[in-house]
Image (cartoon, rainbow, N blue to C red):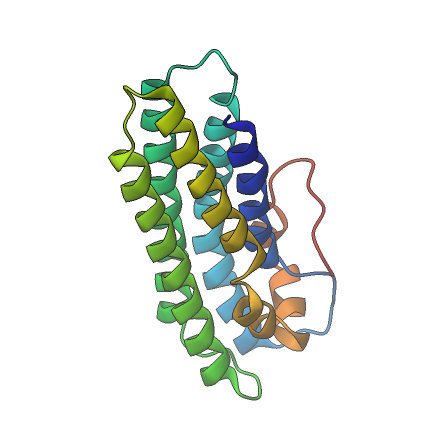
Length: 190
């Protein structure tokens, strides 16, 4: 019943991977400073999101009680909501990157991150509202949440990709904290 939820959730990790950039070496001091600030703030949040994903996947075994699944999922969604909000705040605080259309890219990315945060907060509320006494109803409710999660993992990182195009991505790739922000065993895109 909860396996679909775990599969949908693993897609959520893609959003964090978008924040890790790819290789490059031409230095731009202002941009490097911006990237360093963002990467340092993203790293603990990426770990929080990976831990939340892992917790949900661990709780997907069929012998988990609905109460255990509900408690784990609720906490994980809250953690993810907080993490995306914190990443949005970090990008906002860092200011616009020193690139063409930097301000628009920054504004769009912050808006998107806050939207993702709100979506996870909404999923937490949905999980909290599920009836754990009725296994069939609970399973149906989880399916609905998995569908929402699937949509969330497939949409939502266009502004982040735009933010990290070109020089910004290269600057982020030069930051040690961005290189380690990816979850183990997952490749970065780019």
